[in-house]
Length: 178
Image (cartoon, rainbow, N blue to C red; front, side, top):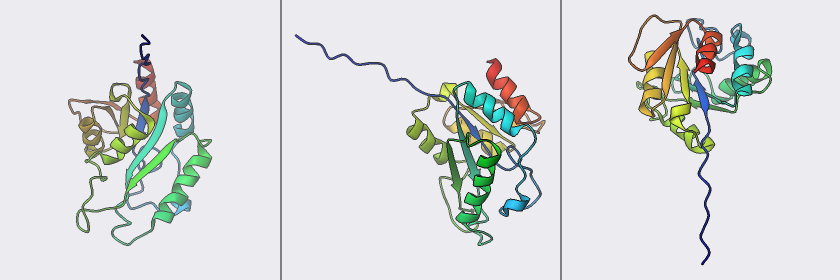
């Protein structure tokens, strides 16, 4: 009798990255013009280190300006292309939520977790090996909803399921040390 041999499913690891304030400068208003989109110092190096350690890199960002009619998805794609070029095309996927509660509802929008869930299914991710790096409580909440630990950038606010770091480079040190 032949036994069916199955191999265990190998799950991958990823770092989910909020955009504004983590990867690019937070300028106090919506960033959709590529000339205003400035990649933060240390980001290319941090992403290269994470990628070399075997992490998928997934950007998850709320882009409510689309729902408000301030800019288009093409404008967001242009900024993401600039980020990719600055970082050697290391980012594996970009997810953005174009809704805003005053205009439309969406499970994609953080603190909901649908952007993360889509990436988890697409890349076969193990939440125990993933991180959410963001600069807002809603980023940490989205990660917690799918069982992902968080690192809050540039904030002294502590939440039960997060660590904190001054920037992505320091967050990368934390991730790679564990």
